[in-house]
Image 1 (spheres, rainbow, N blue to C red):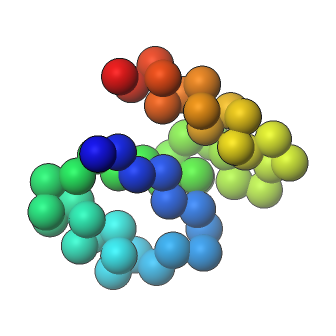
Image 2 (cartoon, helix red, strand yellow; image 1 turned 60 degrees about the vertical axis):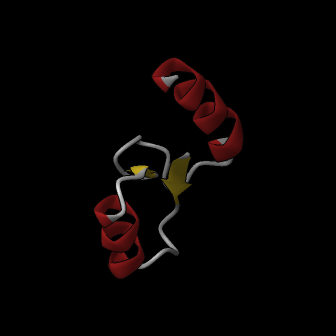
Length: 50
């Protein structure tokens, strides 16, 4: 399972999920923060990761 975390998710949650072995990318890592089209861009980037 892959997770895209936005800026409202605390770093603790990110570390927890990564520690469990989940693929995690933050909105800022994907250069999607503060964007109106975050969901659409995220969908395309996640498809590329698969």
